[in-house]
Length: 309
Image 1 (cartoon, rainbow, N blue to C red):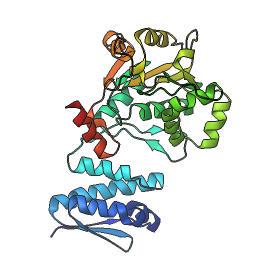
Image 2 (image 1 turned 90 degrees about the vertical axis):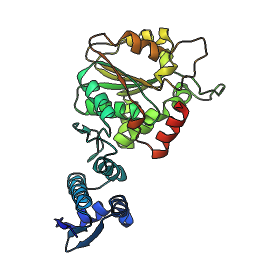
Image 3 (image 1 turned 60 degrees about the horizontal axis):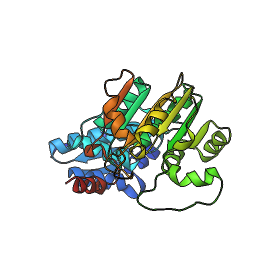
Image 4 (image 1 turned 90 degrees about the horizontal axis):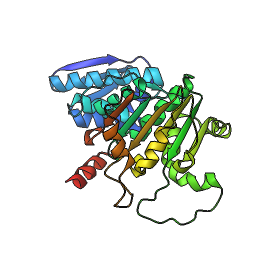
C-alpha cells in the first residue's frame, strides 16, 4: 500500500495542522479514506495511491498556512478538500490583507475571485448573488485592505432602511441606535477584519462611517471606499442618487440578492435596473454570483437551490 511522509519539524505547527482534538485530521481521513499518523514530528500517510497524493498535497498546504499564519481554520481544510476532490476548481487570487494581525481573506470560489478582481480594477462594482456567497464579506475585506494601504481615507457603510416583511415601528435612541440593526451584518464582517478597539476608534474619528441611504443625498464622497449593502431594496431613484455621490479617489461596491426584494410590488429594484443600465459603461462592472459561490454552511446552498426550483 502506498505511503508517504511529510516532515513538519515543529510540534506546535503539527498541532495546528491536526486542529483542536484532531478535528482537521479526522475530517481529511474520512473524506479521502487514508490512514494518517504522527511520529517524530512527521506526518505519515498511507492508502490508495490517488488518495495519498491528495492527502499529501493538503497537508503540505496546511503546513504552509500554519507556518505563515500560526493557525489553521476549518474553512482552510474545507477549501483544500473541495479542490482535492474536484467539487471546486482551484482559485488563483492574491490574499486580501486586513487590519487584524496575521489575518488575511481569500476568495473561495471562481466567482468570488472574479468579484475581488473587479473591485481591484474598477471604481464601481455592482454584484448580485444569493445569501452566503460572500458579497458583503469580501467588499468589507477590500475596504479594510484599501484603508490599511492608505488608498482611501475613509470607509462608508450604507444600507436602505427596509424591513424584511416586518414593521419594526419606531426604534428608540439616537440616529446611530436606530440604524444599528440595519448595519449589523456590515459591522459583524468588519469586526472579523480588525480589533474591536481599533474599529471603535475609527468609528469615533469618522474614518468608518455608517449611514442610512436616505442621508446620502447632497454628499460628494472623495477618497472613500463606499459599500451599499442590500441594494436590491433601493428604488431606481435612490440608486441614481447614490451612484452620483461618487467623488475623486473613491470606490463604490453595490451588492444585493435580487431574489430577496422587500420593496412594494409596484416598485422596481434599483439594483436590477442599474445592472441592466450600467453593464456597458466603462469603469462600471457587474458581477453575478451563483449557488456554487455560497461558502456558508453547506445546507445553505441546498436551501437556495430548493427555493430556486
